[in-house]
Length: 217
Image (tube, rainbow, N blue to C red; front, side, top):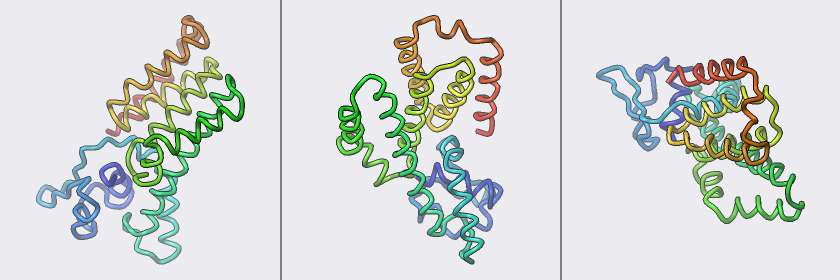
């Protein structure tokens, strides 16, 4: 989890230099990232997309630490709490989105049973509660949001769908298969000509914004 998280303190506190970071913090947090003091580098093999979604929670924890007189070092307890809160938030938001997608086709009891089953009977509980700092719960939320936007598709929403696809890939490159599944969902409910009705400017704007999201990596 620290390999995904380290982008935020590295960017906003330490300016991508290991100098000033708590001693052996890479080992203490499970070696998700590595401090290369001899090269003045902070190394992580994980990609940066998750940090976009976690940013509001990180900034809230950072502000709280400064106001409360707690060391604003990016690793104090409020920052850890922000990871937990963010994971639970995106898990619940994803479940709500899935509920509303299903509600168009099924009864309230059936939809409620489905989202409860998703929470308790899949590994969603594990990643949402036990390991909320990993990428899975964020990907779950983004896919739920993409399904909802696809179900209520308008040409302008293509921009958001492209941006969300870029976020998915920037969270985890293997997520590139997930937008393709959402696209199939769109073809099923709207027909295969849905994308032909979209103005070229929406494609261009969506691609530009998506590239800007991936550019920092």
